[in-house]
Image (cartoon, rainbow, N blue to C red; front, side):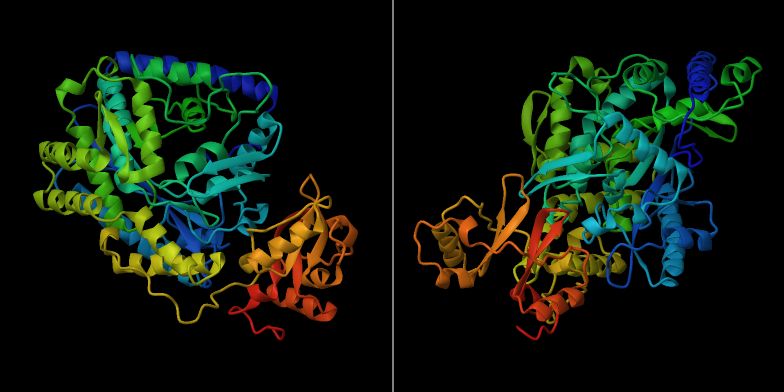
Length: 620
C-alpha cells in the first residue's frame, strides 16, 4: 500500500508544496534519464506476497497487527484489513538459481508468519479472495489502524460524494452499496517486479500489456466473493470498483478509473508516461517533504522522487512502472499487479517464471506493437481472461485463438527461450514452466474452487460450504502440491460447520409479495415452493408484513389482498445476531421464523428448517 505515514487531512499549503515537489521530481527524472544515471546491463526480479490470516473457525482473523509486532522482521508490513499481511521479498539478479532463491526466501518468511500466527490460534492462507470473508468482516472494526488507510477511505468517499457501489455480474450477480474501501481488502495478490532498460521502456511496457491476458488466464484463482460465483478472477472487477473515485451523474462524461489497464499504447519515455499520469489523474494523497529532488540531481546526487512515488502509488495500473533505488543507483522496473495470491508457493513461482520468461523472450518483431495491433483488442483480451480464465478466446494479431492453444504452441516456447537467454537453471525452467503446462492442460485454481464449491453447496448452506472450502484449500496448500494436482473435496460427514451467526445460515433467496398483491398469489407461491412464510415488502424494499401458513387456512375471501391479512407486528433479527439468541427469541414467542433485516431492509429469513443440521433446535 506504499507510504504508511500520511496525514488524514491535507491543508492547501502542504498540497501546493507537494505539487511543486512532484513537478521537480519529473524534471529530476528526465535529467537522470538524459545523463544515463540509471542502472543498465543487469536485470533483477523481486516480489510482494500478500496473504490471509484465518482463525480457528476458518474465518478472517483480527490479529494482523499483533502478529506483525511479534514477527519483528522488516520484510513484513500491514495491509488494509486486520486479516491480511504482506511480505516484501529481496531483489535477486535474474540468473542461475534466482527463482529457487526467491522461493526459498518466500517459504522461510511464510514459515515465520505461520509460527507467529499459530500463537494466536490463526493460520495463513494463500488465495486471491478468501472464500470465508462475509459482510460482517467488511466493517471498520476490521480495518488496520493506519493513517494511510483512513486517508484513502476518506478521500474516496469525499470525491465520490456517496458510498461505494459494487456491481459484478458472472454466473451470479453481486450488487451492493458499502460505506468503506474494505472491499478492496478482499483482494490478495502476488505482485511480481522485473527491472527493465529505461531506454526501452515503451517496448517493454507495451509487451507487458499484450501478454497480460494469457498470463492472467493461466493463473486465475478468485472466482468467489460473498458466496457468489462471479469472474474467474473476480479481483479484477472488485479492485476497480472498490477504489473507484468517479461519481455518476446525469451528464455523459468520460472519467478515468484509478484502477486501470490503460486506454492506449505507451509512446515516448517513462517521463512522458508519468506526465500523462499527472495530467489525467487528480492528486489525492500528499505529505510534507523536505528534500528537493531537482537540487539533489544538480549536485550530482540521486533523489528518491518521493512525491512521484506517492502519486504513482495512488494509480493502480495492472502493469505499473516504478522508479526505485538499489545501492544508491536508480533503476526502472515493471510491477505486475494482476496475479492472485496462491493457491501454493509453487504455483506462484511458476507464474513468476512464465511472466519473466515472456518479458525477456520478446521477439524483435513485436517491438512496434502500436503498428501491429489495436490496443482496444489487448484491453478486451484482459477482461475476457479475467471473466473466463484459460477457457477464453482472445484476439491475437488479427486472429481469434483460445488462450490454452496460444500458451501451449507459442508462449511457453517463447518463455523458455527468454529464461534460457538469462541463463536460468535448466532444472528450474523445466520444473516451473512444467507447472504452467500441466495447469493449462488440467485445472487451475478458479476451476478447482468452483467445482468443489458447487459440490459442497449440494449438501450445505452457503456459509458452511465456504468454511469447508476454506479449510480444504488450506489443507491442500500445506501439501505443497500445485493446484492442478489437487484432489476433489470429500463431503463432510458432520455438516454443522462453524456457523455461529444468523447471517451464516439464513435463507437469502427469498420469495416476497407486496401489500397490494392478491392473497391468493401469495398462497400459490407458498404451495408451489413448499414454504411456510412469505415476507411482504413495499415498493422501496422495506419489510412491512409477513404471511404464514396459518393464513392459508384462515382466509376464505378469494379477493382478499395481502395487506388485508398480513401480520404487521413483527419480531425481527439481524444477520449479526448469534444463532442461539435467535433460537431463544423464536422459542419465547412461539414463532417459526424470524425476518432478518439491515435497518428496514429485508436481507434474509431464518426458519426452523434453516436450523436443521446446525444446532439442536427444540422445534426441529
